[in-house]
Length: 316
Image (cartoon, rainbow, N blue to C red; front, side, top):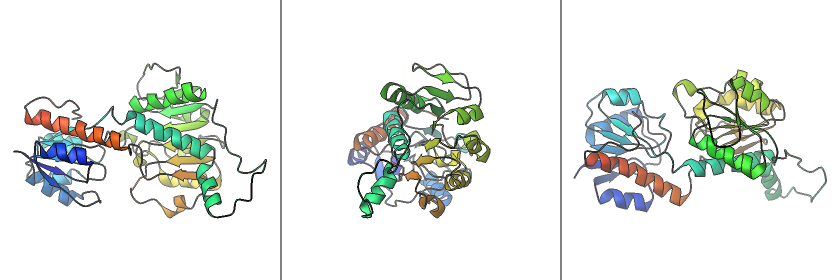
């Protein structure tokens, strides 16, 4: 029986299914693996089921490597150096499709909460400072009919576009590095700056890492309208977090909704102190049935490898 390391606690269904097929070691720490621990794991186990925060860097692949597959739990894999993995003979897979709707739902949660000041309103009520309904109390941004700009029109971007267009009558524009036709009424813009300047609400759904690191930098944030709302359900490293915090604090943009951060789980105090930002603890796929589906998809890749078959969700 091949050895499998699962780097974080998983739903019981995932662990049970894994143990039926592999000799499983379940890592108990809630903190992601540092490169030295990742290197030890690569030298020790036949296959590994890692997730966000596990640092499979080039340094981790520098030593002896026994592992043949990293079946990542999650669609994003910017915590894995896929070039180093390929050179070391390690295949990398991920879990797309099953996360699409859940992540798009969280994007809509953040759009509504940030525009309508829901987080601020709940804090006001819980603090005992709410004095009753007033005509000018906590006026926010009306969502229906606003123009949404989506950065990255992959599976998740298109799912967000459908919710915005069909659910809230929102005109949709999008920026994608390559020309892309989609089945939701929308318009592709040629430049990122063009999208940033035209959209009332901006939603980022691109993969993290690589060329997308700091894709939304200070210059791009400066293109936004003062009334605009910024939402990120992609990866924290896509955005210059300091520039975004400064723009929110100065009132140069109206609000933001964030589910991801540059150095998770660290969220800067300056960002946490702001009232005009809704902060979620990376809840994008946090529904039991979704996490179970992610676990099964990761296992499907490992089982395919064990049976000498191509990995269905190979990324390198």
